[in-house]
Amino acid sequence: MQIQQVVSPPNPSRVILKPPAVITPDSDFYVHPHIIPDTDPRKGRLLRASASIRAGTVVLRDVPYAVVPTVNPSTPDYLLCSNLSCSRSLAIRAEKGVRCPKCCDQDVIWCDRACQAVDHKRHEYECLWLKHKAAILRRQESQYDFITLWHVVRLLAGWSLETQGASTLPSRRQPRGTDFKWGWEAVLMCCDYLDLWPEAQIKHWKRLSETYMDDKSLLPCPLSPGQMLSLICKEETNTFGLYRGTTGPLSMVDRPVPRGESYGLGLYPRAAMFNHSCEPNVSHKPDPQGRMTFTAARDIAKGDECMITYFDLTVHKSQGSRQDVVQEQFRFRCTCDRCLDEEAEENLESMDTLPFRSI
Ligand SMILES: C[S@@+](CC[C@H](N)C(=O)[O-])C[C@H]1O[C@@H](n2cnc3c(N)ncnc32)[C@H](O)[C@@H]1O
Image (tube, rainbow, N blue to C red; front, side, top):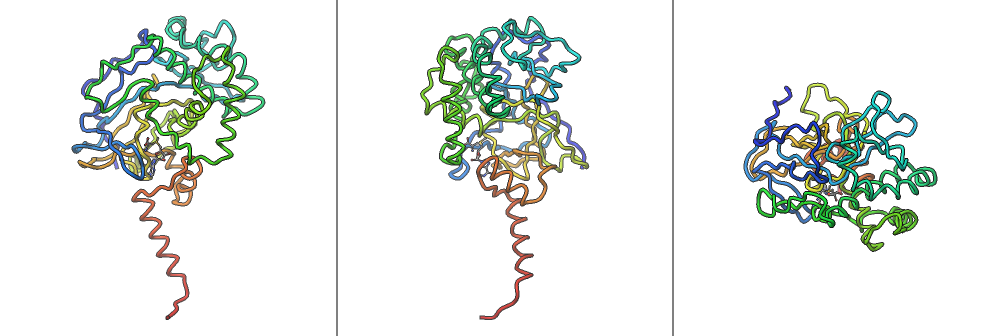
């Protein structure tokens, strides 16, 4: 099958060479007029096509509320520009970049002074916390825990800027009624599934938040312990990995290519409404500014749910492997058509091997 030609949104945003002086560039959000939010009693929120959409059409492009680099400390090849509206990937051996003058953390870098200046207020929120907690978190807990909490701190930084009126929040710029929320309100709409996480995991996050997020002199955060726990769960349930390749259906290409290693992660509050299918009709890929573009991978009929895959289908191929990853990482049972068909086939095969018995 041939790769479909991508149909760009009718109003593609300009290519940002030097990011404008905005903190939360929600104005770059795009949604196709045929995409509407909906709900389902089993799956919760979802996105649906209100009319047919042709393969290759961009159905949604979301901007992250916060992004963090996911750096392997033993091979620190790439970092992301900390300016959220830039988020460019920097090859740290080849490019100099600008470091924090307070040396808060090795993973904080900006392309240049312009990006540093744009990001000044947001970085101020995280700087002290990083300086005092980053190394100890990596050493005493894990790189994963550090990344999770840093992402949460960056979400809080965005909120802090919103409440100070320092970000250009487009509550006045909603393209279509109240279909989609903006800014912190959109983050709050994300599900936390508090009751679905294992008790041990919840205990672990409670301890992390008490140990590393409680000092108001480092992190001026007005959240109660319960709200902080909910925010951590939202982060874990809704975060997208950033990969150089496309995450999407196998049928997009003749020879499926794995999406590669993650170089960052971000919370895309509107795109978090996409549910998972092992036979998705939408693929996604981040652009160089960290915006996530979602494209119809095949024709989508009126009324169909628009779904992505949450993991790399080129890696997890068998039904068993897919169910394991969905259960372990996302805590639900996938009941997409592909899983149900393959499950039925397996059941039939195992019935064939049963000894025949008459009543
Ligand atoms: C990123 S959210 C997707 C939006 C979510 N439905 C909501 O209400 O906000 C991920 C969560 O949605 C649910 N979900 C996603 N795909 C699903 C599916 N195929 N079947 C059942 N639940 C699903 C799971 O609870 C999962 O943890």
